[in-house]
Image (tube, rainbow, N blue to C red; front, side):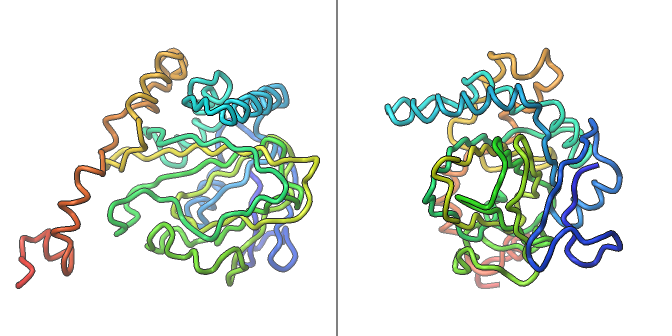
Length: 294
């Protein structure tokens, strides 16, 4: 079972003091339990300590170092073209869990990889749900945060606000809170290497900068997936990325080809000007064919 961060209304033993959640390693079965599923859909996240085995984790760290060198040399390659990070986008222990949480079909939206050095400035409170405009949460988008060398209270802590995934706000509309604690928010600052956290993309979260880490940079990858059923705003170059992924065999002999389906996305830019022109008054009335003047 995944490790849950209890924040006060569970009958189980609390796993934190005040606003701080202590997460300990636990076994990770191939599928999430019913309790894990209920927790995710209610709270908006699921912590999976030590999900990635040590050999794969080491290869990912080495490859991320390689990516950083390439970027410093202005060599910006698609991340799915890197063997290990590409394979992470279809990592079976995660994909099978996502099938239970948002399945049976979903598509990858993007993968980001970064090495956060000491002194990193962090990221203010935000949510990452892709919708244009932000109006509902009818379908699920998730981000999987991978902490390749864990979290230890330096460089940056993860902040989450449980149950905030159903509050419809613009992606950056809560940035004015900076990285301060919010009522009910939790801190994740103690995770073993190879841990992953599945978050509903609309969950409010932040990265609080912390001192230290001069000899322990933070190796971080996030991969996001969108549930089938609606079209989602596309990530730049998504068709090229998906073609590269399929040619590289990331679909794992066809089992996970559905992850790289560009037909699940639409290009937002051609719609921007038209939307700005017609976005007046209540959208609900426009959907019923009622004009601006009623």
